[in-house]
Image 1 (cartoon, rainbow, N blue to C red):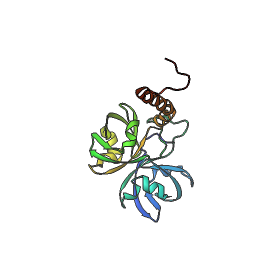
Image 2 (cartoon, rainbow, N blue to C red):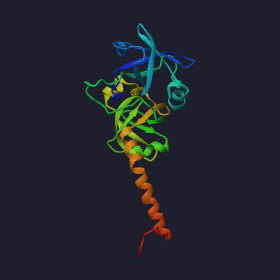
Image 3 (tube, one colour):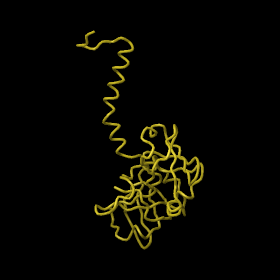
Image 4 (spheres, helix red, strand yellow):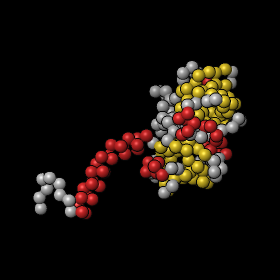
Length: 209
């Protein structure tokens, strides 16, 4: 579990046959084989490391659902270690499980991101969203995406300040919103069914005038 507060900007050193190597130092201070590190919001497992670098195996599923494979050698990436129980929760609960790839429409400070239609219901004003591993607050939800206000500090210490229209970013919506939607879906469907039945004059067993 992560918080979406970026600890370090790493650099892609290589990406060959599913093995990603990243140059970094801070996130390696207490890292061990098998630990998780979020890379642009993607939870990856450390499988090898050395002086100033670490490697992770990237599955076909991760390549298909994220923008990681599109980063060339030298690209900057946002890095974060998992949250510890005693840490402050500075952002929000981030799983590192990317939901989809979004597209930058307008750059910082008023970052506008376009997302797939199935993610739009989870985006609400003042709600949380993760963009390339950065915990952000939605300013305005749109029919095709959302906007967030990026302060100069966030722009400077993450990759978001360098993003331009057309760039792709990893999106993770608030998992709490997904759980709530799943829990209320049966009731919503039942209400819709009752409304349709009323419109067409269908009676259910036990109903009386």
